[in-house]
Image (cartoon, rainbow over all chains, first blue to last red; front, top):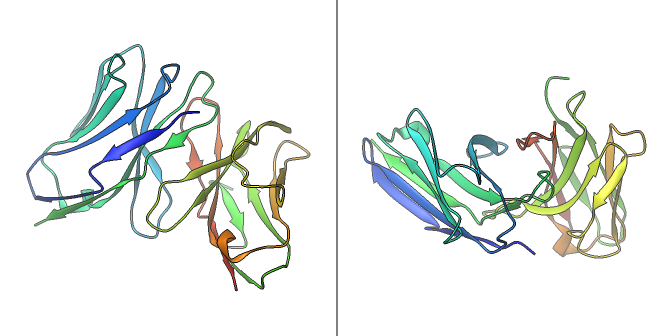
Length: 112
Length: 112
């Protein structure tokens, strides 16, 4: 089955810096890669996703890149703000959005 | 309701008792998922339904765990003869099958 690894487990940056979180997946059949943000005590919420037919997607300060050959994808946050502080989870699934497998999470701390 | 509703929000039970956790998905969402999330970890897939059909139950840890969605809407996750290792946050999510999962607030289970 699919296995998703995520690094780093914690990331501390200064406000205004960029943050990058990386994930690798094992199943070459996976074709959907979402990122979820979970604030303390809250539910996970989708912030951006990418499908295997594109290599990059951007939404304001966040972007995701996908390298299908290497089976890895990354989340990029620019101009970080304190409200970006949360745990971020990557995930992967195959056709039909069936079994979404999550990574172990990255705790991002943005200091003012 | 506007979002995924789960009950109870908190459940404390003694080892050996059975528990039932309920999920009321967003109206019209055909897919419903159950995940388990340990503290500091990513959501761990348990099972999912399309309408009333259980499509994948490969993540259920053992035969003490079962789930149903008899009318294609509300779902119940049942854990029989609970053990301390079952203590976790159990999250339900629903989807229109577009990829994005909408998570509920979760049911926190504590087995004494």
